[in-house]
Length: 115
Image (cartoon, rainbow, N blue to C red; front, side, top):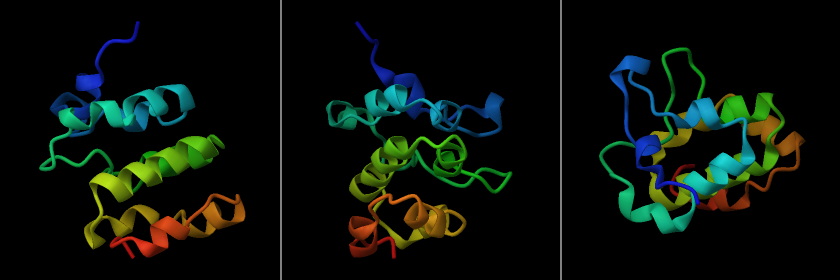
């Protein structure tokens, strides 16, 4: 039995104001569990789960580097559902062309408020 993923939705100052999601983005099973709709009541709208880190990368970039295409799809669906604002378009500046080249569906992303 898996524990509730509450710890993964929090920001940790010890990690340089990061959540745990970028560290787990290389593992599809972990991302699938964390981003499941059954945990949506734990999400705090004031603290987004996906954002640019100080190194200019985000969890999507890390998942793409590790060829975790299904994880990227799950992250896109989450971002559209919970962070659907133009403020988060910067998450896709570096990776959008790569996502198209790797046949990741981007139609929902293009129809969202993000672009």
